Length: 583
Image (tube, rainbow, N blue to C red):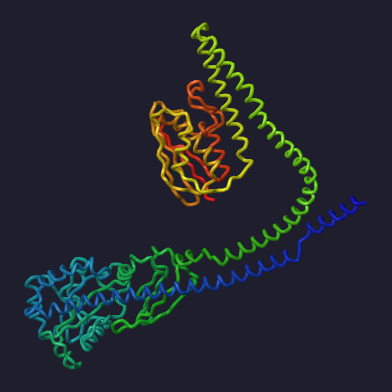
């Protein structure tokens, strides 16, 4: 009847254990809600960061163009100051020297050159041409026009790429002419509208930049005076494509740009065949009008493919997909654990009886092992002592009648009896290591080392040094370790004198005790072998020992959650380093 009730209760437990509980479903539901919440929040944050990044890139492009135009303006006003500072006319030679000093190619990237345009009235034309042809016989003003005054490009450097522009009269074309007159009348730097430079073989959009200078370096206050005292303008021609490359060539920009002046295209990333990262469906766009020296440039800025690629790694999508995968895995885990729990309970019921039987066998084995230890320490030692005693009697009684060879055999028998006794003692100690736990207590390292050395059978020339400090450590097991190490150092030494140095270091989580001798070293290839049971590196007839010393030390140290290592080059000296876990 009891068995029936017990089996019924076990079946109810197994059925209950195999089901998903309400708390499991709540956890899965909460995980799904958190996944979608994290996805929505991450997506919002990500989109905001993308927009902020685009705005920063767009503002950077506009600010770079502004800074570069300011740099060019400063260069032109610098040329005006140079002209004003000269008391004589600016000759071609002077202008060549000045322009070379500017190092245009390095200092002003994107600029096509820098030059001077003089204002020549009709009654001044002959005198002007005579002066210019003194150094440049082929100099000519072109093209012809119907205006009453002339604004020819007199000097421009570098001359070679601007050869077609030398002598070009700004009055021949309305855009150039109106802007130069505006610079004259306002006394300020002015830009032309979009033009095609005569020196540009590709006929791409460009513009001119003017800064006026007046008679005797004056700065007239009103328009009428400016018109009467104008001498000319310094100017710089620009091909817009070159300007933008000079402005942004070194920038790793992630936006595409279009710049218009009064509806006319000045620059277009889309039109450049070498530009492969224009995004036909940009993520972000921005329109901005900027006033530039009498003109208004309309910037149309949009994110490019590089921007899209950087933003492609959308972490919100990863969060959503990863969260849903985790939710599915969580559900599967709960189902698996429920089934596993049911199987585990069934298996546990099956194993309980077998485990009880094994426990009984283990207790009996432990009892037998203790009995074996007793036999090893008493029953085996007694006849071994008797054998050793008999050998001594025989050697004593027959020392005068037995040959020398027999005496050697008796000595060898006594030596091996000692070894057997040592082996039995070490086996007994080794078997007892895991049977008891010793509490830590204060131990004086120097005193313990001296006491151990005095108790050992050592040559008179051996010394030991250890720091006079107290350490907190289980005394009995630590003494076993230290005694075996000191004993090994003496036994394996190849001389009648030597020194054992013991040092102590407090390291995180461990007490580090190092025992170092000056005897023959242990080759590195034998370091692991030396700590195995019943292993000696020399013949047992040469070195008295059981081969269990280091194995016992290792087992004691590891029993107290420590570890041991050997440091030796195999030539001279051996360090045994013990890391004993702090209690």
